[in-house]
Image 1 (cartoon, helix red, strand yellow):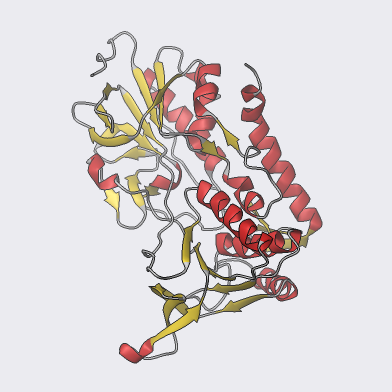
Image 2: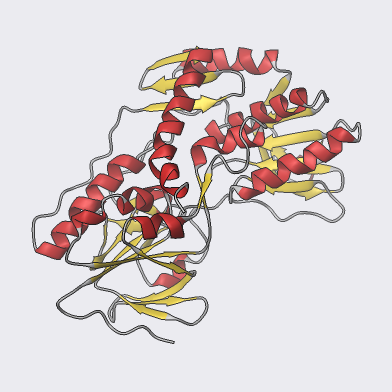
Amino acid sequence: MNSPSPRAERPRLLLVGAGHVHLQLLRQRRRFPQAEVMLVDPGGFWHAGVAAGMLGGQHGASEGRLDPVRLATHHGVTPIRGRLVSLDPEAKRAHLEDGRTLAYSLLSLNLGSSSPCPPPSSPGPRVWAIKPIPRLLALRHCLEREFARGRSPRIVVVGGGASGVEVACQLRGLARRRGARAEILLVTRDERLLEGAPAGAVRWLMRHLARREITVRFGVNVGGHAPGGVTFTAADHGWGEDSLQWLAADHVVHAAGLAPPEGLERLGLPLIPARGLAVEETLQSPGSPDVFAAGDCAALMHRVLPKLILHDLHQAAVLADNLSARLTGGPLTPYVPRQVAVTILDLGDQGLAIRGRHWWGGRLALAWKRRLDRRLFDKHWRHQQRP
């Protein structure tokens, strides 16, 4: 079934994906009074800020989840449950997985990201990716069952960035909370943790990990899985068949960074390999001025965003300005990423806050992070409580 084309007197703004940017945009529905606004979303929303704490057992599954359908309805946006599979930018039509076609005047894409992960081996360790976020909840439940049976699993966490560090610390916290033991090894292909972070912060973090009995190995490039563990090559080892080495593991958690979501190549829009949909400074797709993209699925053509900085709120503000300008014929605003912002890692019982070259670690940093996460989420969550 195809939807009718939007009437000329009332343009249609189609938001595809319920990521952080679009959730912020829903709250600005009044900025588009002349438009019909629709949100296409394949399922529930999980707030990334509480994902690590959910893995560690500090947050329940419901604390970071909301229903985009109810949120959209609350703000006067028409919700559509579905998944985008392809676009026709010239005809301005979006094709959904179930066969429906939606016409649009303006399109915004906020499709999130994926977590790359080598295929599992059978037999072999259990393999987990950090996205989609419900996979972290499944990992927690799986480990809790093993802890209840008295097992002490060997867990390898792949990735020395913020996600890998948080996952390793939360797994230790989960084990201690359940009175269990677990062998936790954090591996990275790099020669240090948290690329781009101040050296002092990294030294503090290394001491924190040592106190939590989390082993760290550098120069480890995990290539796949094998019975009983993972295979890897070491940075200081020559190439050849004898360069392949092995690490024992019952569970392998891949947290070595995020990748564009699958299927972007089917949208017919310009891509930047390994980064996502190409966008200009106005967040428009080059050659398709009525198509915008933001969040993890989008990649600025002339700038690479710093890895330790979140940009969702600022992007949402610029996106709202430019969608409104596109509807009214006004000038568009360039998106200039803020180079100095605060990133706070949730390490379970402590936090590590980084702002440019400044940093501080401890319980106060963690309390600050949880306050910020709760404040952001409550802007949406309080509407979910209404019938």
